[in-house]
Length: 132
Image (cartoon, rainbow, N blue to C red; front, side, top):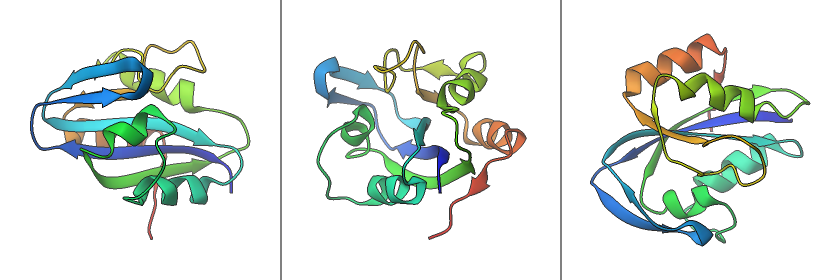
């Protein structure tokens, strides 16, 4: 299975987190969504994110050490759609600049906002809930 995924995460307190080469970044407590893609194994990528023990390869690996993944959504597809999906959140939510987008021209792939508003966009984009 290939496609795009969204991690719905909660950070329970304001925190400074070292994010790889981005360095120390300030995060406020609240709800976050991270948008990614996996064109080899979508299920494998999602399961990797859900593991507590993993090598830190992507920006999200550093953040997920501190924020709890509360839900995962996915959409199957053979084309990289994460940038289009990330743009769906850009106008409505605060972004974390340069996060998760070092391989594209997006401003961010991590957004902070209200849970119900995130869920509404995720539903409108027709993503499915990932059940383990």
